[in-house]
Length: 262
Image 1 (cartoon, helix red, strand yellow):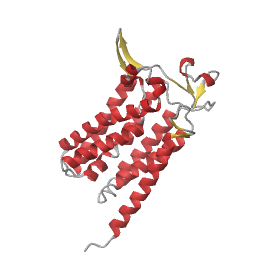
Image 2 (tube, helix red, strand yellow; image 1 turned 60 degrees about the vertical axis):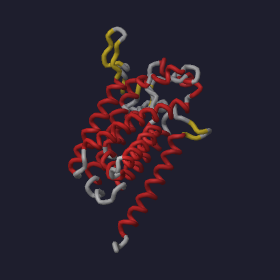
Image 3 (cartoon, one colour; image 1 turned 180 degrees about the vertical axis):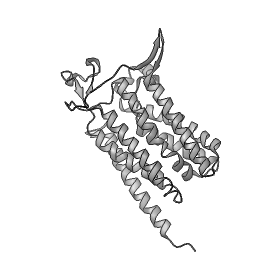
């Protein structure tokens, strides 16, 4: 059974350090270190890569927040100052990936950097960072699943339960499911595919997109706080689109790689 100790690592008067922010910082620093090591191995400039990462993370954070806020405008529209309270949670990973990825591409193109190579270098760091960051949901008691009595159930305090599920105490720890899946995706990308796909720029990135989306699709089906597009879950729709994109992209890259060179 999982029980959150609360959202604060340390609190002294009005000053507080939240687990959510600390884990985010750890995820970015560890992912950056890993990507820079890979850049050096591939003979790329780690300082240029750092610039891409910083720009991508900054824009990605904004995109993740805006994506979440837009889907919850009924709440944030009447509390505009809450839009800035990212330390309380409320980041949508799909918004972050789209905005951050686009920012990285634009920056790399403008600086005449090898775009696909840089994205491949950063690809394994993304699921590793997500695996770490998902624990922020645990400490904030958010993004949990439907009620359950499984041995690994998650206790949620009454103040964090939806009104229609107030009678239930234990829920699926979907943060844990996604964290473990992301850790598996990282392991596959970094230890099994990284060197094998090095000669096909873009392939490792597409593998990350597809593998992550498969796990996210199923985990999302358990969550009770999904962002909705009418009657369907937005994250599941996005996951299916990204799976299709990765399969089509990998098929195209494979066909290109098999073409005889003139």
